Image (cartoon, rainbow, N blue to C red; front, side, top):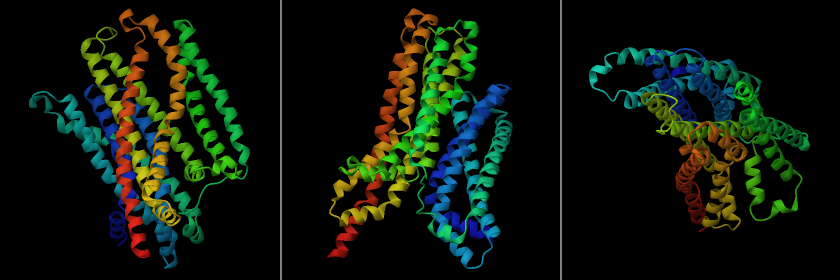
Length: 447
């Protein structure tokens, strides 16, 4: 009975699971591709599993956030189950079974898509070269399944803990619960932490540029720590500052639509800081992959033989594209879901005298800000680090590749602009049905 109920609930709430399905399927597909590359090349060691491990960590955080979002969407339904007499343990098992069932479907879809992508790229040979295709698919699926089990175990444990703490009254109001802080001025502490670790990051980059080659390994090995901490601290400070401006009721915040936009951004600012940190790191990884891949494909780059350069270049560019798709797709789904949730607010604004075009403009402003917000810290890091690293590369690479880092960064920026415009137009077009129809209904009711 519980299995049937889980399947029915999963089908009924499939729209709410779109974000979960997209994240799980795409990331598991990347893990599958990396496992196929490792198996076919008979590679081993930490370098081979570093990419799947990194994706697993990102996926655990993202799925944890999505599970929290799902709990808010289903909170009243769960409260009704408890009021009707269902035990909390059975309710938890029901929800976990539902989530894991959808997760397993994502695993099957992700491994199939990942293996198909790998086959498209690397099996462009006669069919006799694919005699071990079944063995490769089975072995790569097993490795991907191990990472999938790790993700599901950690996320299920976190979700179980959260559900155990919630009572019926909390479930009834969980969907509309906004995050707040007792000490509004706490953001200043994060601002100081950001400045300290950002200076440490710039110091590591300067060490890479100016130290002798025998000592470069030291700043390279520790640069990741100040990078991650400075990004996280920046978004904690940024969201905390916006929240403080909203709570202190500054006169400027009441001008135009600033108050509404600020309230929308800071309603769940603690979670948003974590999510924006992950997206910023995802953006930085895509930039590094793009620059590395294009550089590998340059004929003047003689570090490896031609075959190895082409293989590594195509792999890096593929990883870049995948990370960009993850970044924009998940952010787009998030925005569409938020616009759908705020449809009642749009109706209220229409009753207050705002036209459809004004509401659409306001929604588009929110979408534009949230799409670009994770890029802010990444652009700051690129602005400071690229000029320093470009000078170092001019000393190492041939004269024909002088200032190549500036050129590749500009090309990556052009790609980002194209992605941004395309996804913004898609979200804007899909959001109109949650704005215009509601206004029409109100006009009919008023008549």
